[in-house]
Image (tube, rainbow, N blue to C red; front, top):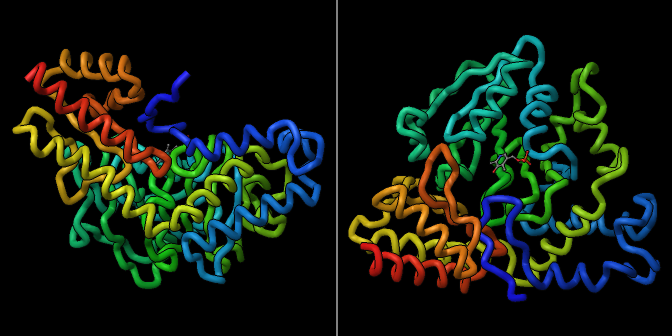
Length: 361
Ligand SMILES: *Cc1c(COP(=O)(O)O)cnc(C)c1O
């Protein structure tokens, strides 16, 4: 059977060469006579995977010396609680910028444990854009400011990040990590579930500045403590070893294909194929995001009516392009075109869009 073009928002498509490599090694990983899944995490083979993945995250993103890279479980959703628990002391609070459903969830979860302020939000505009820098009013001495770099559901993305001086900036980068270059040193903590841009579900990457590992309150559950995981090199308990192994293969693939500069170039070209089709459709396709907030990863758009949107998804599926139905809160269509989506997939979708319009316009 042919592989399809998978535009799902997550879990998402993986590079074919990575899947083939995993397949080749599945029954006998590096002469161990067993798969990575069956091996102990206390072996030199697994420790090599763990440390190579950590080193590749650092190399690809240019992570400075004063940061740790951790591989944790529980998804990005667990970080919604772990971040405030670890970083906010009893007499402090945290600021949140709301740009979509995930940012809202992060703030809501944090507010169970600590005082939170919403310091900017585009909810009133149905999250069609990222707030301008001058709309962000940081409160007095927050423990951190939290933002979501790419809004998976609404299809918007921060084009540049606010400069907050000494105030720690925390970002949920689940749906755009490793898709473009950015300055890690602007952030105190970055987290990302792997299943969009890095590998399969089951592991969450956390990049944390080392000074934040000091003074974590003693009543935080062990498994949520960044200091414990850092001290144990992400091997405090049994890690999601196969997921980390897959992330390592994806990171190698990224490196072999020119690193983040090349990924950014490919992603810009890929997204342009689809955005240009929207922009040249004389209003047949309408993008949800305003132009200067458009995401390179999740492209959200509407058709003239819901019937056509349904028909579009059904016919696209019949042509081997799946996962295009938009999230219910936005409606319409969404093409998720993460790192592993090929340019051929984006070309096929753009051609399909043009043909669909000619037939149904
Ligand atoms: C998918 C997603 C999440 C949720 O991730 P889980 O790993 O399922 O908890 C959080 N934030 C963003 C931006 C996402 O895209």
